Structures are given as C-alpha cells and as structure tokens.
Image (cartoon, rainbow, N blue to C red; front, side):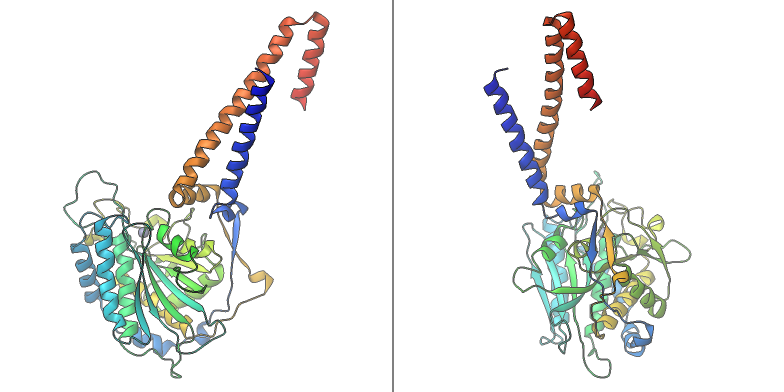
Length: 427
Ligand SMILES: [Zn+2]
C-alpha cells in the first residue's frame, strides 16, 4: 500500500470516528449516557395537609357506567388499531378532542382543549385547567398523562376493536377525571387553585414515547414559554385486574422517589385498592419523557408487572378483559393526585439527601435514539460498522506485514522482530 493511500485511509477513519462521536454527543438522548438523571424535588403535601372533604366530594361523582360507555364509543369506531401514523389514530384523537371541547365549554375562562400537531398523522391533545391564583411557580403545572395511540403485532385481521387496555383504559381514566373535575367549581373553601392542571393525551407512545418527547422537548408545544412540571403521573393500562388483591403497580425504577411517597398517601387515603411496588427495567411509557428533562414523574399501572394484561399489542386486547371498577379506582387516584397538588403551595426542596436520581441504561439510549432520531441512528450504525470493519482490516494488515518482514529477514533480524512483537503484545 502506498503512503498516500495509507494516509487517506487514516483521514477517512478519523473523520468517521469524529462524526460518530458527534452523532452521539449531539443526540437529544446523550444525557442518558451519564447513567443517571437528576429530577427536581418538591415538598408535596402530606396527609395532614390533604383536602379530604373536597376530594371525596369530587370522587363521589365518578360513574363506572359512564366510563364503560365512553370506552365502548371510542373503541367501536377505531378499526384495527389506533396506530400513531394512521387515519384511525387521527380519528380517535379528534373524537377525544370533541369530548374535551364539551368539558372546556363548561367554563371557557378556566378550561381549554388544545391540539398539538406532530410530524405524523395523530396529534397529541392537552386539556388545561388554569390556576385561579399566582403561586411561587407562576408557570408551574401539574400533569396527568396517557397515550392515545395503540399498536397490534397480530398478522391476522381482528374481528373486534383492540388496544382496549393499552391504552383506551388510560384515556377513559383521564376523561372521567376531567369530567368530574369540571362538572362543579373546584375549590378548597378559599376558592383558590394554586397550580394549573394539564391532562396530556400523547400520540406515538408505542414507538419510544415519540409524542411526549416531542412535546416536552419543545418546552412545551412550541408556542408557549418554558413551563415547569412540578409533578407528572402517567396512566397507561388501568383496566386489567385479575390478581385477587387488585393492587395497582407503583413503578419504582423509572420514577421520582419523592413523588412516589406522595402517591402512596393518595392511594391510601382515596382509593379502595392498595398498591405494590414494581419495576419496569427499561424506559417505558410517557412519564419517562418528563424524567428525561429533569421533571419529577411517576407511573401507576393496573397491577405489578408480573400481573399486568398479557394480551396487549395483540388481537386479544379486547373489552371483555376490562374491569371498570378497577378503572374507577384509577380515576380516584387521578382526582386525588390532581386536586391535592393543585390546591397545595409547592416549593422546591434543597435538602441534599432528598435529591432524586433516575438510572438509565445504554439499551434505553439505543431504543430512544433508534425510534426518535431514526436517520441519525442509521448513519451512526453505518459509521460504527465501517469503523469496526476498518479496525479489523488494520489489525490483519499489521499481522501480514510482520509475517512478510519475517519471511524476508535473516535469522538475527527474525529474532529481533519476534522480540519487538512480543513487547508490543505485552504492552
Ligand atoms: Zn401503553
């Protein structure tokens, strides 16, 4: 190989290496590579601060029959799946928006129903309940989220609507909570909602939480100044409850520990079922998007991971498996969470031992980058493959060159070359 060719090869490898490193460090998800992300901590209210009478009055309006009717209505018209980039996905989002508009019309000064468009067909939706006073965080909000898309890996056509538990159950959980929260004025006696509430219906969760990442990344939906999420609760799968104890699953690994403590109190005080701590083991569902940007978030699902609905993402995720009593328990959780936090004066905690860290893995990075930054990921894989192949060729070439030198050398020189090689291997 000529020197010029060799030099050109080195330059090519250096460019590929620099580009690969740049692709990683400029990725939206590069902060995962530090291993853990710190999320903000706040002094959430404790049981002694709870507005039990106010919350119980709201909870008493929850109607299981209405929850079932809403799910049947949204399920009936969807087709095979509400895939995020499909006409069925779009149609369901618009139907949910129509329902939200009815709730917003109850008090247009306080409530609003908004559509957030993405680069794909199905939009995300936001229902807002504005605060009625300023607080220490005038732009601070409390968020409850769910996803409106679904996915079905079955090859065979389905005779029934699917994606009922994952995640129409979460959608109707939020709709019922909004319904009861907006059907009468929310006050704690002083008439003040200190923190604004937002209910997020995310698109594209099934592909590495595309909708929620886009929403939060843009510091909130492009059009508005930066907002601070003081607390976020995800509702993804709320209707399958076959375990005799009917305990909900409280996720502990991808969650804010401080917020989880508050949620435990809410379940204890306002829900008719208990909870069991559980682990996700990878960055699943939309609350991870909030955690990723340093906002405290938690996820409570229908059961501990070992007892969740085994039929999701298939033709068998149908309405017969939904326990509407269990969905109603999640509505109670959402109402308690939303009301207690919106009525509280929430301040940051600066005590070092109360700092919250959430651990992420390399697998999370690969999955998030692959599904959210697909072109970047393709180029990264191509360059990585090129560098690996190039490095292997370089090693083989060096070995061939040593063999060649040995073949041509005198016996003394051979000994020296072997010693030189031995030294190189030893180091
Ligand atoms: Zn889901």
